[in-house]
Each structure stands twice: as structure tokens, then as C-alpha cells.
Image (cartoon, rainbow, N blue to C red):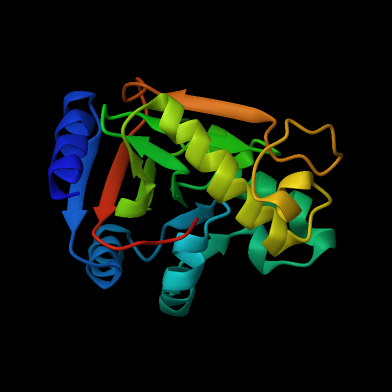
Length: 203
């Protein structure tokens, strides 16, 4: 696994992504709390990695203005989505990262996948080593057999994968596999930094 992680980091850097490695989530949090100014507003995409780390609470407690639809009532979600889209800083995880140095994500709404590559002064992607796979095919397989089924169960969505643990290319109104985004290289005019964390984090 160490060789795969090292290769992934090398290729991410070769593809133009600023990339940092951390032994654990607490080290990554300390780094972010030092890097992000307390006066900056922050948007967050749906992420169990971030939620479980309590990073959002530490940012709020020290004074950052935070926009995350997970933290508001349904009536406020639409406005929170909009504010998160124009925040100075954006935090998210990635569904999968290939050893070739590509980020692969699947989304239902599109707020998260659009913000991970455009519209913010700085974007931070936090990813545990469990998100690393060999190639695009393994990335899609990981998302559709791990990420989506677990999220469907957590959100109590009416999708087959919630019950079967695998994708059936459904037509459910709750379907999450609507938008697939592959970042092959660091996009022009976007400042993206990837934090690879030597733990199993999120889905």
C-alpha cells in the first residue's frame, strides 16, 4: 500500500496538483487550521471525512463563517448551497483518487463536484488512503459499490443500491449517480491542494 500511496502522490504532483501527505487526520486538521485565515468564509461539500473529523466545528468555533448544507434545516439548504458555491475557501473529499493522479467523483446534485475545480480562491481535498485505487475503472467500481450504497443507506434514499450494496443503473428519483467528473490534470486558474491522509476515512 505504501508504494501505491507514494506513486499516487508523485503522479498527483506531476499532474499539477499541490499535494501534502499526513500521518493522520489530526495532523491534516492542524495544517488546515494554520493555512486558512480565520476571516475567510468556507463552503463544504458533503463529506463524511470532514464530518467525522469535526474540522467544521473547530473552524466555526474560532470564527470562520461556514456554509454547509449538512448543518442547516431543509428550508435553508438552497441558500446555503448558493453561498457555499461562492465562498473563498472550499473543503471536500474525493470519492476516489487513482494511482495515475486523477480525481474521480460522482454526484447527485452537482454542487460538490463543480466546486472542487472552479469558483473559489482555494480548494482543499481531504482523502484517506482508502480512497486510492489503481485506475479509472477501479475508481468507478469503488464509488458504485462502496460510496453510493453507504451514502444511500445513511440518507435513507429509495435506491436499489441502498439494499443490494451495488449499482443497478437505476431510474430512481433519489439516484445519486447523475454527474461524473474526472480531474485528469489541475485545472487552469484553480488553486487545488490535495491532502493525502494515512488513515481510512469516509466512504
